[in-house]
Image (cartoon, rainbow, N blue to C red; front, side, top):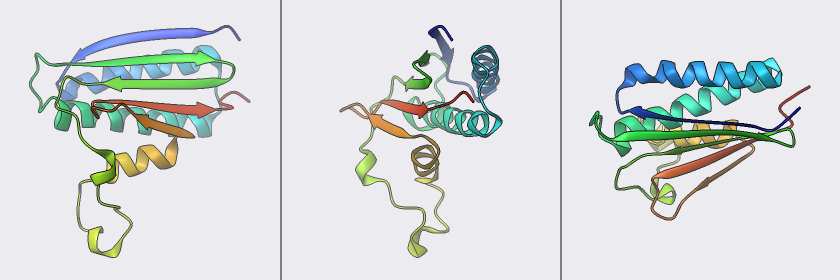
Amino acid sequence: MANMYKSLKVESKTDNLRLIENAIDEVTGKIGITQDNYGKIMVATLEAVNNAIKHGNKEIAEKLVDVVIEFTDNELKITVTDQGEGFDPEQIPDPTLPANIEALSGRGVFLMTKLSDEISFNEKGNMVTMTFKEVTA
């Protein structure tokens, strides 16, 4: 399968999550990924974009969320960047610890980490790259 590259910039409105959903559908449809991988990729990406809209850009519509989807060598890389202040991923509470079970914060990043094969944040903390390996059957 040839390489694929798709880039979108969306305003920080939760309605725009469906544009991201459509982009994922389009790319995953073209490259023919497994159903199991589709679920992981969709949930992790929507979580990342939702975090960027809500926490990064504080739902200020004029602030954009940049989503880049790249497919190379049976790896799908998704990078989500917001125009916010950034955050320190090390400071997020572990949602699996009993003390944090009721807390809502930290679940998104935890999910993204569990669902992707690799995850990295830039130094500022306003960009995340998730890698999904062996995505096609």
